[in-house]
Image 1 (cartoon, helix red, strand yellow):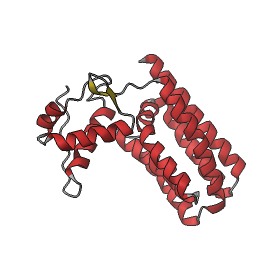
Image 2: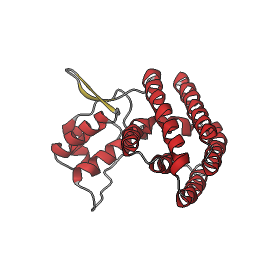
Image 3: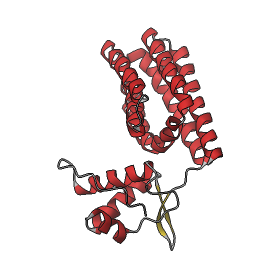
Length: 223
């Protein structure tokens, strides 16, 4: 086990959430490698906590698809597979297109201003070396669309899918060749929403996600 990661204490969060966030970040940053066993006792000692919050964190990581429970072996960090990625992006493409088409009818001027700021925040994050910040700003941009869609069930489905997308977002954001294209695509999406052009917005979103898929596949092929 890599000893570089440490617990990120937060007085405002329950201990189980602190442990979850710590282990999640360690997996996403590669400090806990795909296929590596997550042993409760060892992790509890490493983080200076009891086994209970570690066990709860592992269960939540399993729900996100970051951890697998294997019979007679226990919890291991999940591999990133092309099939899993294609399954997740297939669902995301449909939901995102529905969300942006609905958003064309309901988005407010305030939300459009928020999108412009979110797009600028994302572009600025790409200039640094903090991949997790890039992921967060990318998600913030898309969440404005989800909120503007005006469908709470759809919003909840996208929220659930967001967690499964986290690792894949990291993969395509690692590809610096994608950065300029991603910024341009966000701008195209934003302009289509401003014009309330549902067909153009839907097509822009499909292209956006298709390009992400291609980037991730290239990454998985190299691995």
